[in-house]
Image (cartoon, rainbow, N blue to C red):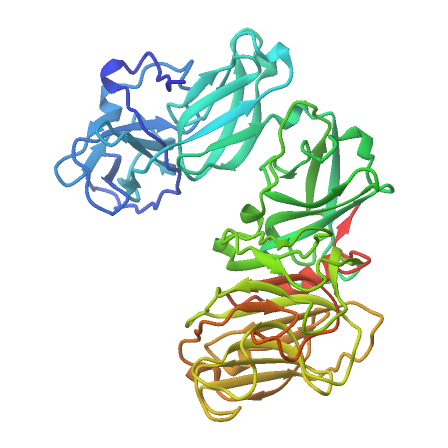
Length: 554
């Protein structure tokens, strides 16, 4: 489907390509400055100026299908340095849309506020390749005279057979996807806000208004709930469904129609870890941009009950690289030989020995490592952190005590060396222990860092969440958590003096890289991130994932 531009703009102004959304960087020049209202520069993806790019200044609420013509004074062509200046018709909220007819790329900057007095300098408009929005509507009543548009842009599309294909849309966050009907304005509504679109990819956007069922899930971080004092950003939360909280007969057989959104309607990425309609149980990871601290009013919406839509479960969108995730293995398989990685790296693990051997845990199906040395998961030679921070977490239920047992390793253990790598384990005295080294002759040398919990895990009946944070800036920022509580004990060495951590060893779960010091017990939700998590990030994760869940209130 070819993108349709407003007839009022004219054929000469038709700009092919895509829209990149971003926030305007607003700098006011002060009274008495130039009379132009908006000025900026258009560049390509490498930062090079783009001459003769077409630029338009559009009101933020502009409807490209119905609104009047854009005046010539609100259009410009960039000079040889990619710069432009446009005079606004008056104060208000605006967007800048730019396009290059040669590269077929487009750019859009939103959030421009004009006060009518000062010149506004807009952040660079970066031209990139396009994506597409496929907007799916279920109700045939929306067909007649109905269309989809993106306010503040030139993008719109008519509906055919319940679908509107909006092409040349930004690889970024679309601030709003709107439905409008020229013969029945009462049906106009916002479908979704803050929708993420990728280059050369078609994103399906479903009209949540057409889902039959919905449920509000409250997030309680007060002392009566998860007891989190400050806001936590970019944290996946676990939503558990059971026969007591959800009627599985109302949804598609594999949960394809389940969706999540913030209270303002903004779509939330999610990943279905398990959907067992027959057993009436499911676990779903939902990516939260922010979980507020000491709050019982925050909520998200869950929608289901649409027989026509395809599933949009997406692990990499939940466990994304922007949040530091490098490897996420749910370890929830009950057959086969593969242990998928939910992160964008897709580091597929291989079950060894008698695995997979599924066992129920607080976060769903986990693995029971019953035969040390032969039972483990092999990820291959991956995840060298170099000079990056490290966060490692895993759920465990021990079955044997009193011996060294590796949980997550990119190391052969033993004494430090320049190829030691990193290792999370239980020591012979049952204390969680973390080692990382880039050299040194013994532990405690500047390039050989170790950290021990001050709490031993000595029971074989309960699940525990062990989490390590290695912040290379300072020893005091390196932490060891057990069940969401800071249990940092003795520290040896200086983490700031550990240089690049790299080797050619395979990452293993359940044993060291050379299959020594193997773990015996149950294990699940192993994660490796190259960032330093906060104390509240770890705590809210534990309080949500433990049984019973202390965060989500139905």
